[in-house]
Length: 184
Image 1 (cartoon, rainbow, N blue to C red):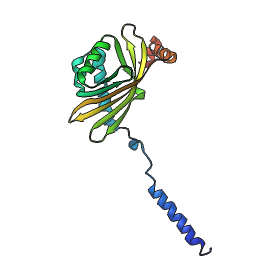
Image 2 (image 1 turned 60 degrees about the vertical axis):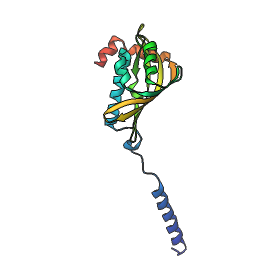
Image 3 (image 1 turned 45 degrees about the horizontal axis):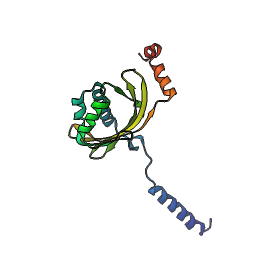
C-alpha cells in the first residue's frame, strides 16, 4: 500500500462519516408527526361528541365545541367567522335533513405543540328522508386545548362530491342482513 493512497482513503472515509452524521435520524412511527394514542383517543372522542350532537340536532352541545370566533371554510357554502353563524347554518341546512358518518380509516390526528391538535379525515353524508348516503367530503379541523377543555378554532370542509356507484354499492352490501350478521 502506498503512502499516497492512505491519506486519500482517510479523506474519503472522513467525508463519508461526516455526511452520515449530517443526515437526519431515521423516522420511526412515533416521529412521523401523527399523534400518540392518548391524543388520538381524545380527539376521536371529541369528533364523536361533536357529530353525535350534529346528527341529533343537539345544538346546545354542538355550540360548546367551537370557540366564539371560529373560522369555518366550506368549498360549496363559503366562509363564516363566528360560532353563531356556524350553529345557525347547521340548524337551517342540517337538522332533520342530513346525518354525517366518519370514515374512520381516513382519520388522522396530528399534535400542535403547546396548542392542541389537527384532525384530518373524510366523511360521508346521508339523507335522513331516504337513508341514502349520497355525498362525501374531506375535512381539516383545528382543536385548541385550554386546560381540560377542547374547542375548534378552524374548520376546513372541502372536496365535496357525490359518492361513486362503487361506493354506493359497497354501502348497500354492508347494510345487507348477511353483512350485518357477519359483523356481529
